[in-house]
Image (tube, rainbow, N blue to C red; front, top):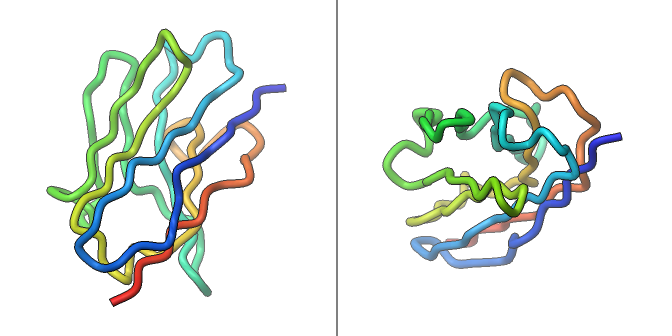
Length: 115
């Protein structure tokens, strides 16, 4: 059973930065198209950013230019660097396969941004 462990969330002020990490137990991680998702209060899960096995990146319009997704295949880890955070970025952040997930969801990591 593949597991994800997300970390790096915190309580921050608007304009600050955070870097999230997600480590996977998938032994085929390096071949996977990975994504970050988030669940904001009272809303459904939405994708935030995705990265192919070769490192091509895609972003939701809401975070384009502020967030950067990256990966370290040697460490089975995907990252999300978040700059210029806004209160509307407040959410629990998760990683999983791109395209809506495919493995069980991890516990996520809470990001709270106050103005």
